[in-house]
Length: 258
Figure 1 (spheres, rainbow, N blue to C red):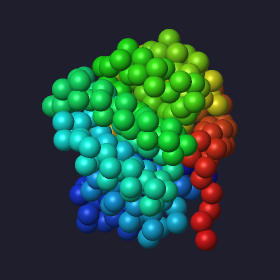
Figure 2 (spheres, helix red, strand yellow):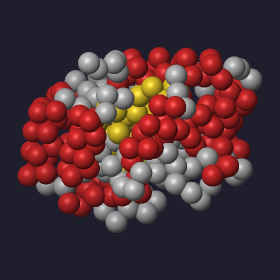
Figure 3 (spheres, helix red, strand yellow):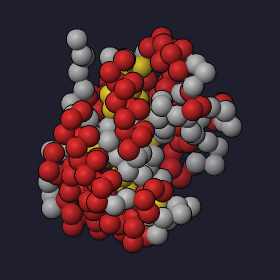
């Protein structure tokens, strides 16, 4: 069994066959799926799926792409939602300097507020960071004050950046872009870092593995990532599944629900 620690099953890419996608994930040995919200409506949609399916867990986040829309009313709504629904993490939150339409200052302000909410509610954070490592790291270090637990999802930086995050007590997560032919440097990072500091994800419906590149990704494709990482690290796939899944269970406090 293996855990998909980051997917977006509420997105319209799954509207025609969502139930089949979730069933297929179980057939392929996906034990749990962490369904990650990016704003108020998707937080709620993620929660509703978690109510319907015992293998799905929800989060509450506010993506940097939408940071320009974040205000006191939005923060109050997210805070109330977290208190009401008990998500397994705060996220997806962070900084994106690659293509976000939100200003850097709006992104930083939103990021800081959501970190504060995570600390208040004693929840880990799921961090999005694209071409923004220096600012992301400084905010995590300053605002976290050594108390913040978190994972940098879809990790895209180098080994030095990974070590800096580990020193903060953070984890990193790899998605199926690790299998891309042009991801040689990233694959070397995945080979070199400690296995117990890694989690795996699909980021569905994005970033399908190389074999399906350009098509919709879904949780069952996590098996291709596990196979790739096992080969890269010269270990059995069962070891990849065991270690990364145990890390995910502890990080998100996942367990079977009645």
